[in-house]
Image (cartoon, rainbow, N blue to C red; front, side, top):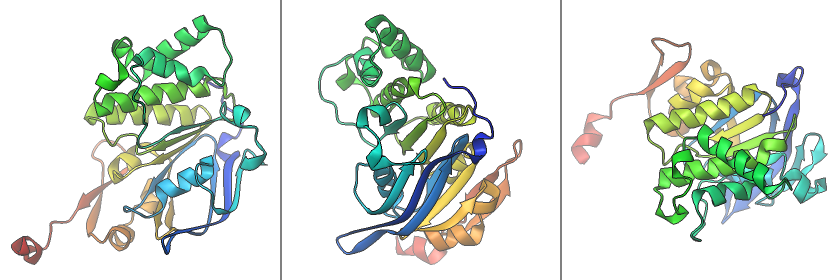
Length: 276
């Protein structure tokens, strides 16, 4: 998809400074600073309402906030939308599409910013559908798909959109595994990880701490609009931090085969079970 940039881990893809955003009296982002690098998969973690998806929406321009967002050294507002669309792709939690397009046609919508011939569009869409395991659905009508199948179709669409990104590529995924079965959860994150290690800046909002630990290079744990932990999976996933952020005790173990932490929730208190 792209050449690996030199020293990619040090290339700043996105920088946000002093983000502030409140809604209905609740502080969603509180003087928030974050730098995201190319060549790295960054997972945004935290409880419901912590500000993860809000941060993603502010970075991509869907939601306005006080503060500054720069993409590859240029303020996001200074980018021409058609140009930025080649370099920044977003997979939202939910994608509304009710038209009876085929899967192939939905994926080909990702080529709109690219201005390429129809034959090239078709070939590119087929390649991305195969990558995320929806090629066998190419002639199916999109509304007839399951939630997980729709999620993977839109992932293929976003990958098609970014096919000309070159060394300036940002992929944002908002809970991309929420509707997927076990195998496709891992396949989706494998694709995201491979893109990051090929030079893209990949940002994933995810709730599963263990999936994040397995695939992300960096974990950023957010709560009340602030960063509570930021580092490698082993650095960020501390039992006291998780207990404080999520309000639930956990044990941290090591995966029996691979070197990443595994979060094991503690048993519920007996008096809580009795109350139920």
